[in-house]
Amino acid sequence: MAERYSIGQMARIGNCKVQTIRYYEQIGLLPEPERSAGNQRIYNRAHMNRLGFIRHSRELGFSLDRIKEILALTDDPSHSCETVDQIARRHLLEVESRIKRLQSMRKELKRMIDRCSGNKVADCRIIEALSNHQLCLSERHPPE
Amino acid sequence: MAERYSIGQMARIGNCKVQTIRYYEQIGLLPEPERSAGNQRIYNRAHMNRLGFIRHSRELGFSLDRIKEILALTDDPSHSCETVDQIARRHLLEVESRIKRLQSMRKELKRMIDRCSGNKVADCRIIEALSNHQLCLSERHPPE
DNA sequence: TTACAACCTACAGTCGTTGTAGCTTCAAGA
DNA sequence: TCTTGAAGCTACAACGACTGTAGGTTGTAA
Ligand SMILES: [Zn+2]
Ligand SMILES: [Zn+2]
Ligand SMILES: [Zn+2]
Ligand SMILES: [Zn+2]
Image (cartoon, rainbow over all chains, first blue to last red; front, top):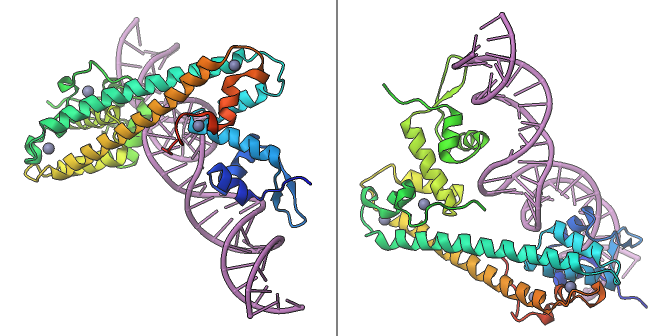
């Protein structure tokens, strides 16, 4: 006898909201499950596993599109995993670039905050620093 | 004679799109400028400076709401800068927490990628790791 | 005058959810 | 069996910070 899960149980185990699961179905990331006589979704273990994969990948920062790609690639287990690995490596590079950007932001923010003496707005070093990038250490702040 | 800037010049200097400036006006972040006889926006130095402040603050990661708050506080130069400093310190904490999250993601991603031997999908360590959080080093991946 | 870049408004789309309104269905206790 | 309340259903709007598009108007320089 197959395991059956309600959408609420799926949400609890997948650590997400019920709406999120319905959204995944809507965009074709989760297949449409069977329905009860009263039109309620009934999931099985395969759905459960797929949701687990999606949620864990999201926690590691992959976009839903990338996840969709990876899931499509896993359809043929005998296929080379080269593309999957490429996606993961590209994602790692993106994560590292975001870290660099945030570290540079942190440096500037710390400097601003340290210089402020907590006096009047007119003398605030934070406001001054926000007004004028010349006062920054970094040459410029790269976009995203 | 006052300096006059077209919206295109503002965008070039502010390093953003023309639409972004119209959007800032729409949400009340930039005041409505004067218009030419043909209804085109005409900015002055004050607008220019305000846009510079906004864009630099955005580059340092502040949300538009926080920027709006800070700009409101600078209206009275004799007022204490305590609130501004608090906003900046809170923002620094957020940046640091995002860095931690990304560093943990980087660690797991590196591990996954290193373990993959580049063979078939069935044996791919990346797919395996994405399927099963048990294989992660971190106990769990905290949300945003 | 003509050509073209730059401007105008209004609105839709992005990403990944989350919230709401107004229903219906399910499960457990009385 | 009836009742209650939690959980489910659809459909749609909102979030943040833009970005893109359509279809028209204005400004400017050759
Ligand atoms: Zn200060
Ligand atoms: Zn700067
Ligand atoms: Zn692999
Ligand atoms: Zn994990």
